[in-house]
Amino acid sequence: MKPQVLVVEDEDALATLLQYNLEKEGYTVAVAADGEDALMQAEETTPDLVLVDWMLPKVSGIEVCRRLRGRQETANVPIIMLTARGEETDRVRGLDTGADDYVVKPFSMTELFARIRAVLRRIRPGLAEDVIEAGDITMDRVAHRVRRADREIHLGPTEFRLLDYLMQHPGRVFSREQLLDAVWGSDVYVEARTVDVHVGRLRKALNNKDERDPIRTVRSAGYAFDVNA
Amino acid sequence: MKPQVLVVEDEDALATLLQYNLEKEGYTVAVAADGEDALMQAEETTPDLVLVDWMLPKVSGIEVCRRLRGRQETANVPIIMLTARGEETDRVRGLDTGADDYVVKPFSMTELFARIRAVLRRIRPGLAEDVIEAGDITMDRVAHRVRRADREIHLGPTEFRLLDYLMQHPGRVFSREQLLDAVWGSDVYVEARTVDVHVGRLRKALNNKDERDPIRTVRSAGYAFDVNA
DNA sequence: GGGCGCTGTCACAAAACTGTAGCCCGACTG
DNA sequence: CAGTCGGGCTACAGTTTTGTGACAGCGCCC
Image (tube, each protein chain N blue to C red):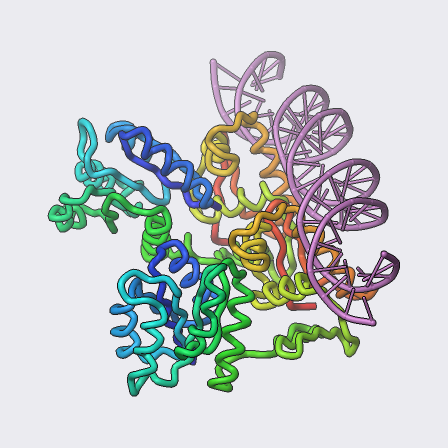
């Protein structure tokens, strides 16, 4: 699945620009205008990466960092700081607080993208990794192929992304809404039950008879991908 | 060992693009933003090949050439010039000064790679790969021939480069845009669907009936060349 | 000038995929 | 145990994406 990026930026123009470019680059993007908002959204969506502006109204970027680190679910999410020139001296403090990298404004998109890729690769090999394996299921995102026990599994685009996302966070339960946001995109309106249908299709494609179903239904909560047998 | 390439280019976007593609192609890449930098790096690493932009701030590409030639360690390193259209008249001057070849912008990546291989082959035989094989398909880039199962396959220039690029990265899926960038050139404007047409033509030329189609369509993603049977 | 090979676009047909509704059934509630 | 609720499944009509034949333009060689 596309990595999910949370952009925390109060300046509207920059936020829009970032969102636009990140999405073009293939990331799923959520934007928060201030620290409060950021923490809320981070808790909901558990992004794969957070971009935080150093200067924010109310809660500062550093503080956002610290708090993200303090929470169970977001403790390991990589963070990249956006700092203006002249704030460089604070760099150490920023990295100390838990940012994984920082970019000095003004920066080019390609530069930013390079940092992002580098950080993702470093912190979450799974995201920059081309191949994810779980049990007898292998998913190759570069080749765009899925196989189970040496047989090729054909999936439609949506099923592919769905499986990708689930495998990316094994064991974790996602509500239908969360899956819609992550897999379909945060701004499309689709019926929640549609997720069921796709999960069904995914299951049918994935499971030969007498094979264990790796997708677990959690009643009145959602679905999860379970690794083990 | 991977050949080491030194890219001397002040324009950030192009430098990044070159680095990215060269590395993907299997070269080790160093980038220098200006002539001074280039000379320093060249001395340190003694690259196998240098790509120099004609237009550079401070020290011009030609000057870099001359100086590289003037030094003991780098006197025999092959050099390829990147020139913009209109600077062609300077060609002779460029070659005189010691460049081994030149490429006119805009160029496609496959074109550039072909030049690089040609120069490396000439100057340092053994560093360039000339023939790619995959299953019963053989592509000879020097002779510019493709054969499948002992029969000669005739391809137009574009189909040839397309197949070349795909075979170069077997299994990997490329979007139509990526293919346009790599095969057509990074700044030509061509309809994305044109790729489909050429893939179609390539398929028709490549596949006798009852032969497996090595080109896989990945719906809503692009195309890939699959090695295996 | 007239073929000829190659290209890029279009338009249309075919194929693949999608979202929704509806029905059924087992699980849970009281 | 009857009544709900949530989820699995199927059918289907609507969309999106891809395959392809036709065509006009271009550069080249004879």
